[in-house]
Length: 408
Figure 1 (cartoon, rainbow, N blue to C red):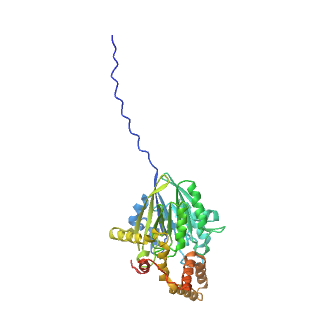
Figure 2: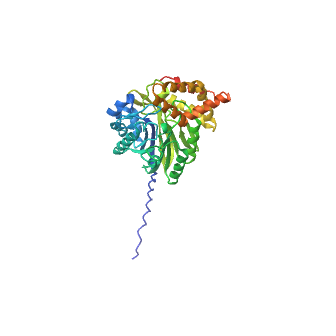
């Protein structure tokens, strides 16, 4: 008997391996948040409604970062300082947790408006509600420590610093991470060696102007060159331009966020937040979301309003296409400010010396000890001594005028 082998079965085709999942995360950075003026009651009673149609966009991000521009405290006695003093009640933290924001940046010129007691209570309130903090602390080590977060498979390092109005920078004790760019550069390099995305977030610059002063441009470029994957600024309370440096974004000012100002000037009523898409511990995409700040809350700009905002942002960013462009655009503000601006500031403080000497002294001290004012005064006085007229690009002066006159 002859045995025959059964016919060989055809080989089964191999199933394709499932595509390898790349760890992804989305980081959102927003600017100044404070439960003050018209927004104080909505932040306490209806915090979700306050954000309007921004809320779904905010919640899409994996890691949400905001600048807490005040203390959250029941303390009643403010410090003597140059500018306004801000605070929210501890229960206003619900305006942060309603989103929720994961990280509160504290390196700014208002977190110490109610002294060390106000800062200490703010830290306790945020800790109880699982909001991480960076940029301020009860010791120098705490104030300068970067914050490292794990989000969506990515490691995110945050270095947060500020000019520290009225000498609020930490020097061995409670305070904020002040204007120490060399220290920030060193921290960025250390964080970069650990792997992950590094964000440098600074609260600095001159308020209400369309172009950052040269010292801010130099500092932000140094932070980017040190390895920061994104450098993001706030404090001017108006939007400023964006620079791309070796493919890395430098955003000079996001403008206001949930921060209400009693004005009808257009550029103080609009702002934008940024989202950073990350894969394999690097930024792969950047997007911007402009919005308007109204009496009842925030709402996204759409249609022609959004298009107009992006055109303005592109025009403000144009000077950053060359190394010397920002300094030339800044000359337009020097021309606008001029000696009339300088003498008006000085005379106002001298007049105040007779009615409120502590306040006037704080204002003078602030102008001498923070670069946002001392550099402006130095450049203005140097221009008078030289007799030279500031030279600036066509259109830059128009933007300066617009920022101080255009109505909402």
